[in-house]
Length: 581
Image (tube, rainbow, N blue to C red; front, side, top):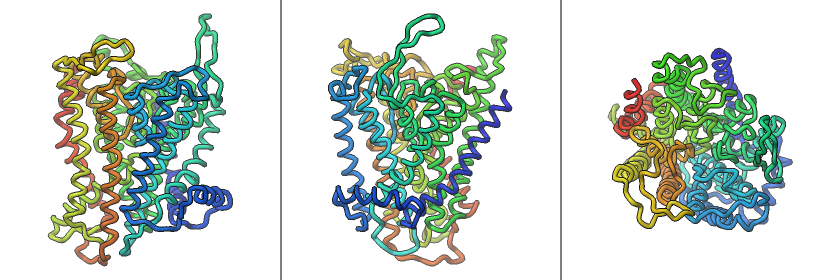
């Protein structure tokens, strides 16, 4: 059984790589504007969009214009999502009479889907109508992914070996990301989901009779399409509250493998797209290699921890032949669930096919580390942007080590670029640790939240009511929530009671800052470097496509993560693991 599970994990990883390389080449051609087979289909569609919106897609933009466009259009999308969520009770396509969301929950949900996080403080099938699921949430899953990919395309353009302040057109990159990359892949994946049993209908709940003779209501809806973009766009939000552990969202082992490949596919491909776009394939393989070393360093011990089982149960003399199965689906098994848990946190998808709250302590630590480093593959587009920050830091350190002004691809990295890189690098741990510290203080002192209320019952809420678990694991629940928010991941420890104004608003603020500043920073750095004079490589140039430079980047990542997060980890998952031993 374990050998079969291991084979499936290897097949998923290798299969993703084999698909990602040609997909990366295709993506590079899309952004470069080269002729493709699908031009006859997509060109008229794209021209129609630009004609209706009166956008000149041939007009090139500076990096500042790109960012202004991105932020403005995201504000419009946020307002639309807020309208849908707070009014879904009377809007159409609501056969199950789902009520409108409260303002604080709608704020959190709208921000979360806008920033590609999909942190769901509501239960999918009971918290959003079909209208909201399609025209707000699924819409945001497409455009948030397209925005991240467009931002990465801007950086690709800036890295070319020439001096310019014109970096393409944001609308062009964005629309092509949606029409030529995301949409065709989603149609293919949704078709597989439908044939395997996922619903795709506007009908409301169905009533079935169980084997025991009980009546049960089962939610339906446009599930297959929602699942496709949730993974291909590394969004992760589930149509159902149980996400991909739900049998209608993830019906079979085949769909489990398809979903696993889908969420990793474009993050892999974007790295190779950069290599093809810049004609630096060796650099792309170096970056992918660094990411893969980090990924394997997290996934292998997690698989070992989950198949070894719970040591406390083992002390009772109970055999765990299938590993630790608490919170997992027997149809997937411990190994495939462990692989998914690391992939979804490293990729920043955030979808789950098992409950992360039930994982072994060291497994949960590895999940959090994947989100804390947040650049081992990462989300579509933004994963490369996060890696770019570490790359700039490594270039600077490497330049100091050899006594030269740091250079990357023929452009000098100077004080302004380093200041931006450090701000972005330090923002991530700042948001996680400050948020966790505030929540932990309130929970430890059992603070009465004053004007914060529990919900419809109107009961005054104490901070201790957030936690179903005390001690080390309770701390881990709060640490995980802010880590997931800051990494734009969206997964969570479900023992945390998060649907209340405190968590909805504080994580919402973290979501905004952690999405847009890490996009603004890399685009600004790339734009500044692009405007500088190109310097030819010399004997003293630090070559960025070597294994030595790859090790330097990996060392920078490990050192920053260790210094920033080890104390918090010691108070949570590490302490919990030691208590079990």
